[in-house]
Image (cartoon, rainbow, N blue to C red; front, side, top):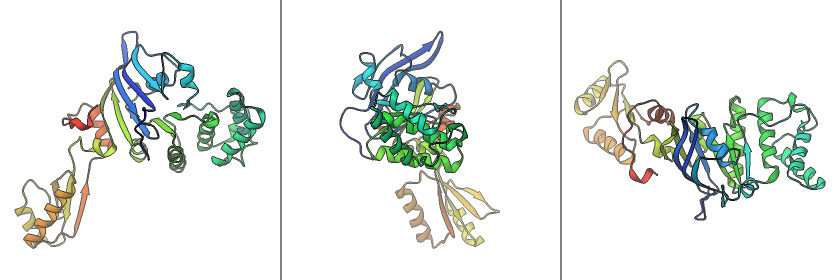
Length: 322
């Protein structure tokens, strides 16, 4: 995915929002480069949807400098609306009319001439594999079809920036993967995607940059790999079939966890190439042959629970902190 040096698609500095004495967003900073996928993670009630609603002009912030699509949100919200599309947690699809009629309704809302509206609707229905169902009531669509139609409706205005608020919630695995492919295609065409999700594998799979929101603040941010390096638990596992080789390795290696029943050793490791090479060189020099070597690194689940569940997280390297 191509990142540009132009003004970010979305930038927020000191974004603050409170409802009474409940602070939802406590001065957060966000930067989303053009043509990338940014994912905002966080537990229920962390403020993800509030952030989306503010950046998409649905509600106003209490404080903060906000720019979306090159426009100041406070000065020219109408210009921001002309630049963005929003697919919320709850489908905007009207089940009482057909898929095609939903699309044409969106075209009317965008003030497209009738002929252009029909062309755009037909193109998007085809793109999202909904042509065969276009004349059927949307109430008969499966969950995956409704989400595809919802996103197709969002694209009628050809937005350069799309907010996807938990777009795959409730979908089966196949429908989720289909949606992932659609999102990738959008970004490959230059669209910027701001994604909120509770599926950590979704953020891992899609996002160029991830921010973890907790108690109204950004707990950490970076690429998926950068975030995974924040938590301990990475290790290399050596498994042996020869008890003598296992015993010899267990005796020689320091800081190793033993599993005598499985003839396996667990060595703490960040999984770097240098560490792996050192382990392999040591095995060769000692004349010890392991039958299986596997590398285990923390996943985003580990990161999420460490950052939002009260577990202590090592200090984040300065180049990853913003």
